[in-house]
Image (tube, rainbow, N blue to C red; front, side, top):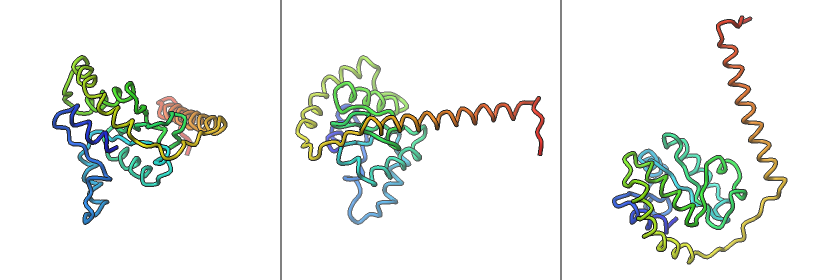
Length: 189
């Protein structure tokens, strides 16, 4: 997260990056500061590591981000994790890996979230190609303190089943809602 905080303003000149761990002073009320920052942001990046997946604070901030940002523009940034390592509620967001391809997707999302993009795709690719080696070097220095706990096939399948069921229920509710709102359906009370 610290590496991204330093790196993103180099890619996007003038970009203001706020990080809860660094930008809340010891004397401040964290809830007020967090609320103010979330109200002003256009996109949230959740940095995920094997260690942070166990953090309740991370889940709280992810929920706060998803409700505070219009359109829930939240990107989980996976460091030394696979998508399958991420479980709900964080798995509901489209994640990217902390590698060159994933980081470029993140940069493209930041560019799109700015409202008035700072660069077209060709320029964005050139700027990214220039700055990526700096972030890659910073990420290579990060120690990996804990092995990621690999989720079993059964855990992943159960999550997929739950998502399918939830999706099916929503679709069923949509179908029933359309049927009941139809003019040729008789409502019995």
